[in-house]
Amino acid sequence: MTIEMKESGPPDVVRPFRPSLELHAKLSNEQRQTEAIEHIAVSLSAIDNNIERLVSLFEGYYKVMAANVSRR
Image (cartoon, rainbow, N blue to C red):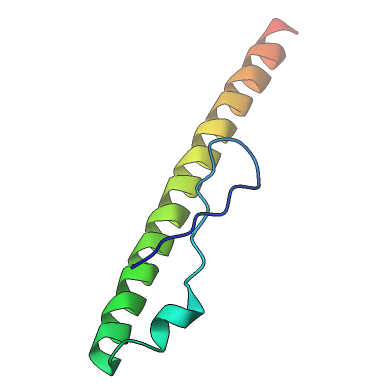
């Protein structure tokens, strides 16, 4: 299986890959299903990673905001 990662976007963000369409023509139905499940797993992993990154960014943002409010 070939995995092609997207490289655009914000730093530290994982991009799901684009499946190669020509590969599907050479696979049996069972192999296509297996590949589809693997693509779904990689995409879910990327989503999880991106959510973790967003949560850490928001935590940092709220710490800065709380520090600014406490100084007033």
